[in-house]
Length: 575
Image (cartoon, rainbow, N blue to C red; front, top):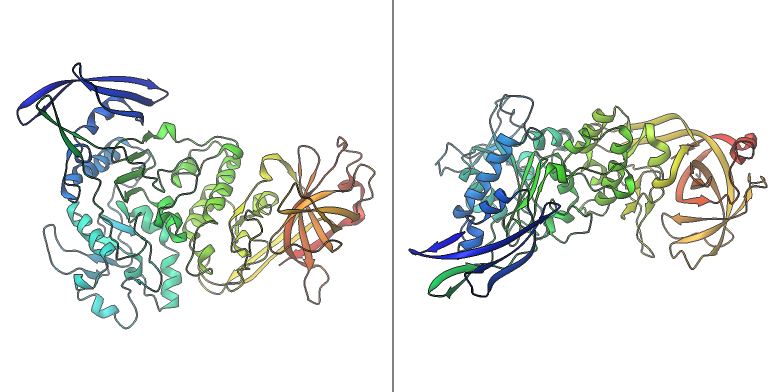
């Protein structure tokens, strides 16, 4: 290829090798030394690599301007709208605007934005995904007192840098409306908060583009960050520009399941905002990022994955976090979708919340759409038809103080009850369930999924026994051994197991009840550890942990102690 600058040109030789969609290349100028070397580009095609050369991030020295980079955003958006069938809505009509949006005026207008009630109007709009930043940097909010004034106009100087930048970006794309949560929902009206929070799925699903302030820890940071400028140098009397590859770890581009330090990726509410959105434009510290169902890419092109590169494996143990809720639709069967759900819970439970009561509420939009896909009943983060798997979460932090999330009525059997990251470590080997759900009760004080839980109970029939907490096994730093004592009289049981407590470990010699939940491939039994509730009923229990009771001999139908010991089968209520 030939590189020209200021009327001069030089021959540049590019050596390219593609291995499994990974481009490895180096470039040199004539017979001279190598100008730059980059080890790998994950690129969808050689054609895509050629498009990188014209992007401002590779040749523009002034990294503080957004307008030159707008062409890259328009390229991504146009490509998505014209070439990605999975990203397009089946409805050819424009989306219906949410209950309230900010009206930015006609294209080219510089009028003050104002809160607008569209009453069913259809038009394109963007949505902002941002981190509020806590009490030190609160965003501008709509309340009952200022609602009417917001509809007359909002002084742009009162808006945070995040909001100002999002408005500027939206106007640059010639879109008139933008949705911002703190301005959209009346924050001191509980009924409005519950009703509008329940519409999150529709809001982000309908958004033409979600603007993610990925690198902003609070509203005063802003979305627009200057990228690192190119380096200008001369070689053989010719001017060249060079920049180092930025290893920006965008939340949406982080496909390997590793933790990420970007401020927005730590926020609980942002999790479903990313999953539900049709398209997300990430504003990182050093560059832009794009995420849709069909493509993941970064501004410098180091990452550029097509939809065929983002399919989830069938087995849970190798599953990646789905990049969008639409990914669920293309899985082969329900078991794959549930496996992906459990992986979602693992990632989501590690997020941070200003208010712990929001832990289930901030996932309501995802729950609402997922239940229509699997035709199942949600039970406080669990699923009725796969209860024998859903109950087997365990706390993944070791030797750390953990708080119970009791203020919003969350039951002890829900992973949201523990204010800590959880994992589903036992699911790979689950072969069958040992419990029957007789009744699942979940009632709310108001709007389903977004209001306080008033009553949550699981009435189940299964094998119930007692175990004694044994000595601590040093090879398992987060578990204690279990010595079975009651309901374990089968000669095929060789006394022992281990457990993970949800909170502080119980002392050695303490007796607990257990409920057999499922069997694994080796015939071992996955159990819930229980304590009796202080209530009039002797059959009400709270969960305190999860564990496994080992079975050392090969299981046979005739010697399965769960079926032999029929007197141990009871109906109990989990609270």
